[in-house]
Image (cartoon, rainbow, N blue to C red; front, side, top):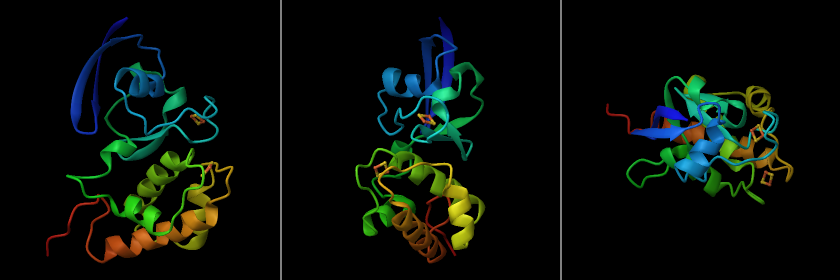
Length: 165
Ligand code: FES
Ligand code: FES
């Protein structure tokens, strides 16, 4: 065990943990965050996705000691009670079915729109392909990403903050 410091959703935590523990376990078990899900535990499904410095990362296979940078989980997307445009688009398009994969879908979609604010259908499919959904919500996911892109272009930056002209 040793002290590890993590910055998660804007807050700094110092935890006495096994440094080899996967980040997913630490987020869920030590910090009580329930956004990232345990799916395969093998880095294959994407249910455990978090953002590290904005990049979509699979937390189930990442030793906590190797984390460098700021972690954002699904809980960290909303700001001061306002949903991120991607979250709002997910609601508007009624994307989830069972919901299990949706943490990974939403965070991966945010990472896409941060890099590419106006993705084509083909770019959305290619980017989102690694995040598996056994309920086959893929068409609604695509529609929600396009809706979020439109919303962000109309007044919110890719980070989710209001754009000041
Ligand atoms: S639980 Fe991490 S990729 Fe499946
Ligand atoms: S909504 Fe059920 S696995 Fe994606």
